[in-house]
Image 1 (tube, helix red, strand yellow):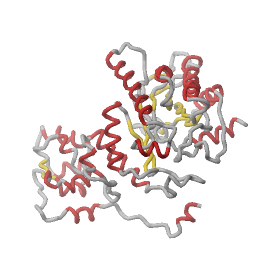
Image 2 (cartoon, one colour):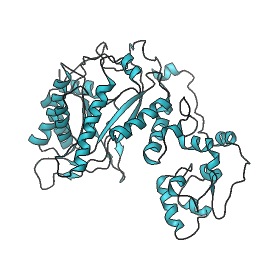
Image 3 (tube, one colour):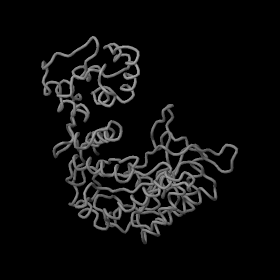
Image 4 (spheres, helix red, strand yellow):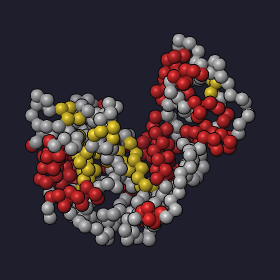
Length: 409
């Protein structure tokens, strides 16, 4: 098979993995050094850096052959899709050629399982080793870790890669057992734990050998099983606390041709994936817990964002006096973000906060109006119910497709 044909198949096969977007790699470059490539630590893979540049990765599978038969996966053993396999040399050459043409800033490499977990992991590690040691590649490398692989191989992977990821795929053991019978949540978490141990060792001993300086991440598929958003967020919260993850990525399930009956025939709303990302950001950055965002079983509201939903369900905390409240509580006000909360605290040291200050800080005045008190503003107490506020602040409805089957064609 021609190399370009392999690339077409294996790049397309990698598109379902959302956990490749990354940041936090150490800054390095090849200026006045041997080799090529650089990292800037700002953000990788089809994303925009703070200075407006768009950077990307060569995102491919080593192979889409796989001995596993995960029901939700397009590359499962029983799937009728074109198959291809790169050699180690081909991936190394592609990465170098694409970088020299200024197409990419790094490599994201995953793979189906071939022969055994150890053999597959050896191939992935060998790609990274050759790039780093033989070709002095200083760009970003993200390797997908095979959970059942020998821990020594995972340790080697962390030596060469900036970030490692172990996809948990589904939020519960029951779902994994039913839809991915060859996989085991215990071994997945064992691999996550071994990576965390190495990361902790590096933190405790700065002179220890480098190990995955951009940390580890994982991915959960949304809508492939019956798990609701409460279950997904509780799982994410546990993963963040137990395994020191940088990110949990959420990927809306995408039905594939000839899907088995064990998975849904229709995808979940993409807005559900978006709401999970918003809730995840509240877990990581705002100090919310999964229990606060989802106190009851079910899914996140689609018509309003999770922070607004929490505020409407907890009106006893509002209106909040911005001249007295602490920074963490100010950040919980709908329409006020982390940066604006800090600026409010800084400004408060000079003078009292007034309504026009919120406008200058570019806060969302429509969202925050019912929830704050300033030196010159106070909302009418009890005048507007939570239900009415929700209707007024809900996202604008979208036009439905009259013939969705034609839109999908």
